Amino acid sequence: MAESINLDIGYFDHIKTVRLAGLLGRGAEMLPIRLWCYCGMHPKDNGALTDFSADDVEAVILKWWGRRGQAVDALVKTGFLEREGSTYKASGWIERNGHIPAFH
Image (cartoon, rainbow, N blue to C red; front, side, top):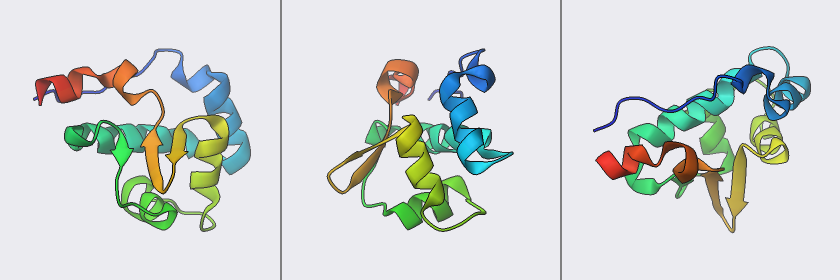
């Protein structure tokens, strides 16, 4: 089983990361990393957060400390998270970290 995720070396200066921090404040740059680590621990889901509400995503995965709904909204707005019907999904998960489900 793979025990690491791929993180682009330009992640902290990427426009999506900068925009996320602008929306949510200092520390928000860690939220996508928490999301990706969770997805890596559950590789069978291929980045889909099946049966997770926005509240679940914030409380269980992100450990969000701010206003309810704000983190999920910001992650969707900046492109780190997608919503497909009632399911949230880590954007680009398979393209960036497809080795994890492949090893699983």
